[in-house]
Amino acid sequence: MSVGPENETGPVQAPPVFLEKQSYRRRRLSDAARLLPIFGALLFAIPLLWPDGSGEGGQVPMSAAITYIFGVWALLIVVGGLFGIAARRWSGSDPGSSERG
Image 1 (tube, rainbow, N blue to C red):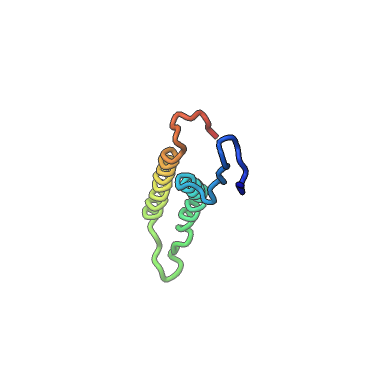
Image 2 (cartoon, rainbow, N blue to C red):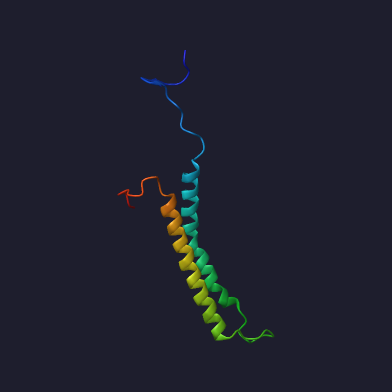
């Protein structure tokens, strides 16, 4: 006497409780990609906290601020590209899939 449901080939296997490693990584990657714009906005807001010369701290030169903003911008582009490459690599086993969302 069997405990679980059966089909013509034998007992039906219950789905695994945990996600597969590839599916788990893909979900975590999409979560990180969703947080990237928030992280970028926080990084772009950091110069607002820099001293403006009105207190005892010296004023930050404009060239340093522009260099920082450009560096953050370039970093966000590189990280976004790496997320894209990783997502393409971890996206399912069929690279020629026509499903696009």
